[in-house]
Image 1 (cartoon, rainbow, N blue to C red):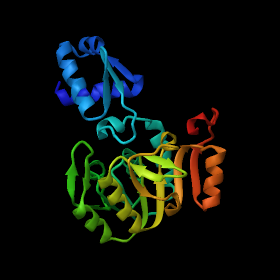
Image 2 (image 1 turned 90 degrees about the vertical axis):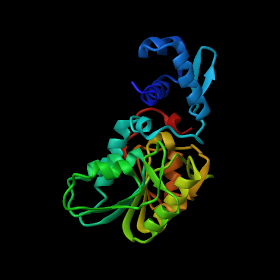
Image 3 (image 1 turned 60 degrees about the vertical axis):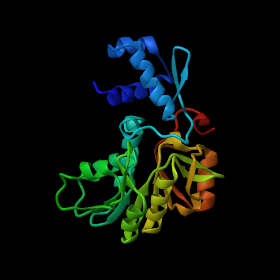
Image 4 (image 1 turned 180 degrees about the vertical axis):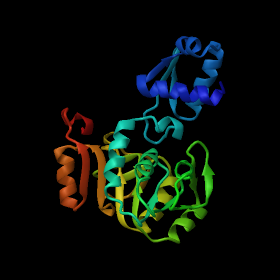
Length: 264
């Protein structure tokens, strides 16, 4: 097993359990404890984990983001629910822009039954996912590949996006907050998404319940810049009232069977 594969598996375990122990990881992966400590040093240096005595804990600071291959396994059912809802909004023959989020990958999978779509994206994973679809126009923005994110960013990506006019843009984010607006983990992603928002008639934010009341490092836009929010679980009454006040339509997959603690 490559070191990067092992570290991604350690990150998955951290996502599930919030902490890991060196001795347990050493047994699990059949490597020395020193090797595991080097893995944890790397994760700590990258801002993804915080080393502690005998192990590490998950760094839940929203200024950092997990590698794509780790993030795509998080709340998979929620992303499927969102994808089904978004699929119902997209008409055959439309031009859509999608971002490099793991939610976008689930959405394009759900769209595959539709005909004659044009998809503009800076996501390598979306490009690969749609590589076997016939009858569609798949357009890459170009740009600089961002390590671990499978995303194209930078001036070339923004120039590529701004040369098109789409019916819909569908994007996700790291955090959605009533005061701070819509935010992401880094400035390069925010800049590309700002360009996406300017290049489409309808602006759809597709986010699962875990993103509510989170604030990440870089601001994408105000909530008032979005036309619709699509999420997996019904937001709290406070959020539903806020959306109504701002004229933002909210689609959700199911009622929140628990209390509103998800959003407090």
